[in-house]
Image (cartoon, rainbow, N blue to C red):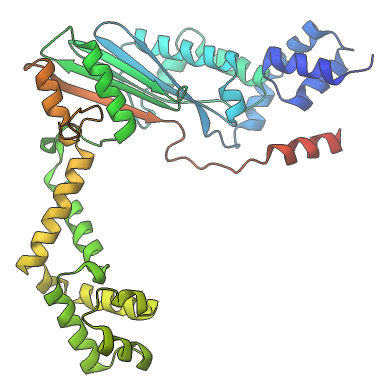
Amino acid sequence: MAITAAMVKELREMTGAGMMDCKKALTETNGDMEAAVDVLKKSGAAKMEKKASRIAAEGIARVAASDTVAVVVEVNSETDFVAKNETFQEFVQVVADNALASGLEGGANGEDIEAVLDMNGLKELLVEKTATIGEKLSVRRFAKVTGDCVASYLHAGGKIGVLVAGTGASDVKEALTNVAMQIAAMNPQYISRAEISADELAKIREITVDSALNDPASLPKPIQNELYTKVETEKLFSEEDLAILAEKKNDKYLYNFLSKEAIAKLAELALAGKAAYVENKIFAGLVEGRISKQLKEICLLDQTYVKAEDGKQTVAAYLASVNKDLAIAKFVRFEVGEGMEKKNEDFAAEVAAQMANA
């Protein structure tokens, strides 16, 4: 029986399997659609082994929740095409439901994943879905929050999944959902500054200091003048850059005229004088201002609430306006594929190559 493109398309839509896998299964079963589905399912274990080394960095997040507990799970596929597949999405929801029912907490780094997969035949179901869909699938991680009230939010069809747990009030789901949307958009790292350890704060300060010194154009004028004097005295620039410095030293556009090498030399000199410059009151003020701005960006309660009518209200102020006793106990934000290597796909080229080898 001749295997037509329409038959391959139908089987692919039924199973989510790859185009050439579908064609092979139909050829093997002489066009019997049901038998072809079985062939794809039975080849699951072999496919899992073959696909184990491939990169699965697409996928979706899904949530499951009760009134006081919520779970978000991330499951990865190799392509965005499969992430939109209904069969794949149903499987991800099954994983989320099982994680919610478990007594496991999970974590951002994949904690407790194997324990969840050992529940209710999920590991076997993963093998089956890998076979029928035709790509490497990976249950990457899940996390759980618990509170007097919980809320969740999925952005862009599940590319970002957020959970928020609140304490002190139980009828605040809408407010917590708004906060979950805030977290999806603004990606805070902490609830408040109180969560930042002394070591982490010291690291932020060190990075901020080095960043400022590496950008000589933004340094306080007294420090710039010290650097210019050293450069001119020791002739540390090329003759061309020395001439530019002499002519435009007080020009605010000086750095538009200096060479990259000259600017790099100024940064090198600034870093070499770091011990003295951190004691400079003007420089210290610049650093503190940048740290304060950064903390406002990474601490949820300090962020400007995205729905603030006056454009100034903080998240902390918004929560207080809803219920003075409401506090954020925990939040989780998963962005699909974050921190993972992704391969660049050229789908048209891939299809052309497969057709050429058919």
